[in-house]
Image (cartoon, rainbow, N blue to C red; front, top):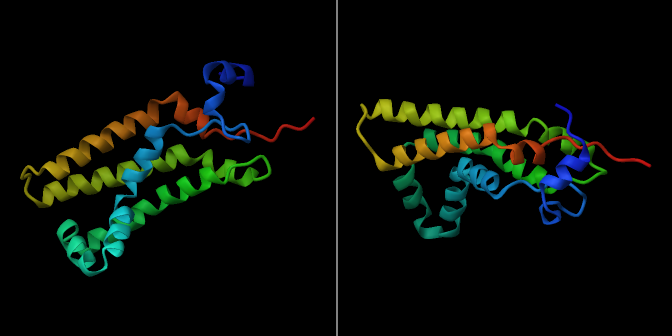
Length: 163
């Protein structure tokens, strides 16, 4: 299917484009990336609360190996959030990186989903709200990222227009 620029302009309002003419990423994609980087958010919050930081990390991540694994799995999400802010017509390399952001995001979601399922397995299937909510959010975010036209078009490589 070939999409010309007129089809995209009619589909989205002018407010949904940034100053360089790129379609802005939807809010749900930003929130999903932030959820995938939740270990970094907790790390920053623990660092900001200096004297209670170690206690916060011990409560949320009793297994420090899991914390480091989550930090590693959240790094691509942070990199994608950073890269989407760098997009401009002069930086074609950023658009090329963002053109593979959707498969990278789906891979990260799959990894975190598998990790959460493994955690449930280690707990012998004992129900925990945190695991259940995490699995539901990850499943929803995977379906949203896979099916969303807005995500696909906002991450699409848009070549530099020359006259």
